[in-house]
Image (tube, rainbow, N blue to C red):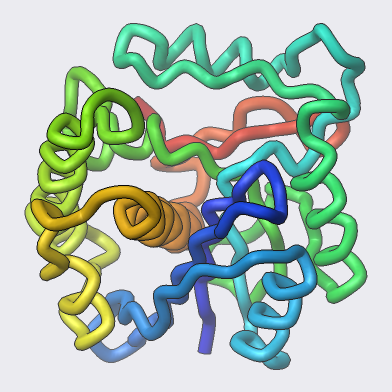
Length: 247
């Protein structure tokens, strides 16, 4: 058994972080969403991961800069390289540094103590216990075959609802028919059948976080299945990295 856990990490522990758990079904060669949740603290996240994964293989995908040794006012090389390749799709990376990214760096160290290696280099379709930095915007561009990202994080409530509805539609169109296949499960159906038109405030933000976590978990599985044949590691373990699908 291998699990893929996506974490849409909030910048501070006062805000909720999305968590999604996908399990590999070797018979159907696809992914089953078994858990979708919102968590507060680093300890909540650590505890949930430990409970879910046990001693099985598990690949964590975190939407946050888990390695950023550079000082304030600078950007990582990987941020510049991702922006160079994806800016035209409106999917450039925000510059990260050790001051801005105190929480993800702290979480990465906490998870290392639990045995999750932050090294992005791993063997495709092999047992592993790693944590990876994933950026969902480039994943949208490639996996959904788009010329621009879906914009659902800013703007009016109506704009956000429209963007989230489009995001759900693209998940159903591409990932539920993708390779790896996102298999229909009760948890997935509950998430994707959410009445987006009724969401606002915290409920809308929570839904967004859960869907972003699902994209992270799927990207972990996509990377595990395809490796560097369909993905690229921008940067490295020393200076920081981001894993994206190849354009």
